[in-house]
Image (tube, rainbow, N blue to C red; front, side, top):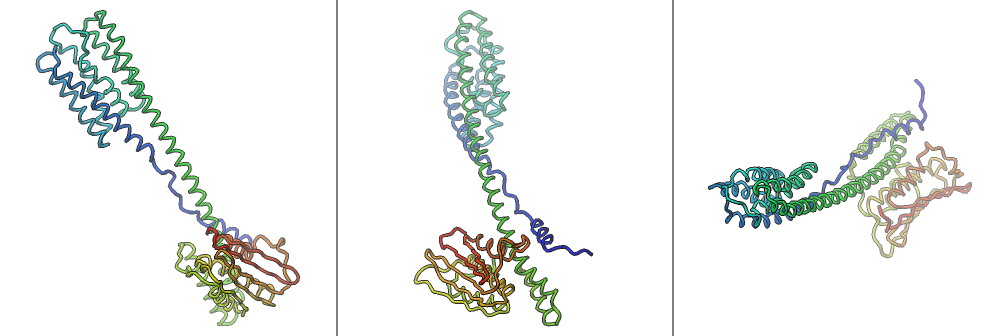
Length: 417
């Protein structure tokens, strides 16, 4: 069985991390919904006014066979009243406007066949004239664009044909429809154009909002994924690899028991990171509490490190989430000092800084190293210290020479995290 390098193992583990759950790609037709509601309300009020005019004209209408005027009034105005109510409450708008838009041409077609045979006067117009643009507006609310155009042009033309038929194609009726039909077509075209423009603008606003939210969600997802990878990489280095190394070197029963304990802690850490459990998040900590916690971390690593601190005159404690990451980074610096410098001259210092921040320094007097020649698979500094501190808005710097190594961690209390 061939042995794989640590670089290959870490690279595979890195890219096998699952991405964040996909966010919603759209925020819905927020503006379009409200625009349609406004259009329905305005159209309903306008149709009610025109319908009231037509109804008053229909009450005193003559020239139809007995009973037919009442039938046509019922067929026309009952659906119109229901349509106006539906547009006002914004319920069943499409079906009820469609019903009126379809019934009105039927009324126009029936009209010439129910006249009582008396001569028809050019003026005043019959009451069906007042409902032409009510029908075209209803079509705009109910149908798609092709049918809207057909109704906007066809209903006035059908009305003009009915006028000519009832007037026996007399010249005065030709003059009348020359004014009435173009007026109805122009008014219907204005209604159709306004509705199309307002709906188009609202749809564009919704599309722009959806793109902005999608872009923001993608950026947030990318940031969360990067932070998760940094955390997992640090955990892999701090816990998993340490447990594997301990297991490989364990010889005595006590060493094997310690390796098993480290493995259990590493598995618990991985499970906690996968589930996003923040149950181990610390309470806000003062410099003295940070110093005590850092001493405990050093003790767990098997060494005693002098940790000095300075208490702030005033200011707030370091938030728990930030304190946890800073302690882990400082603990890794101590572990590096123990591993690579044999703990020679290893010390730590913690003090507050202006703006409710904190400064942590870990130094040793080991042989040092050249940071430019660190292999890419070594994550002790890159992931466990620098990236971890950066993730909470801090800055980590490493200075190393033949005289020793110094790791400084600075977190500004005003930093976003």
